Image (cartoon, rainbow, N blue to C red; front, side):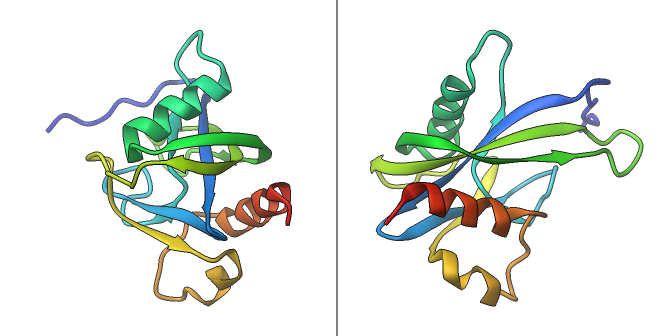
Length: 144
């Protein structure tokens, strides 16, 4: 298997905190980056694509879900930790589940719907950095 060559410039990515019945969808990465960690589904923005278009496409590709995008919940910057690692600016959105059940592609290998208040007690799950803060911000955007 050939090594993945990372771009030499920062990449823009999007992710979604998708809420359904008071719970948020967490997905586990099946491969690098962040293999084995639970995070929000999403991916890179393609050239000429708006953030919302990229988000809808990525969520469809990774989970098969239809969503309604509510608003920007926050952002994270992931700097290269080692030679050959990627540099990403991840724009994270709050979203509402609209239709379909999760059907994961090969980038993900597990999913869980979890109450935002339960995140702090998930000691057995590996979560990507800053995930709890983004989910709490997205939860506030969803309103009561």
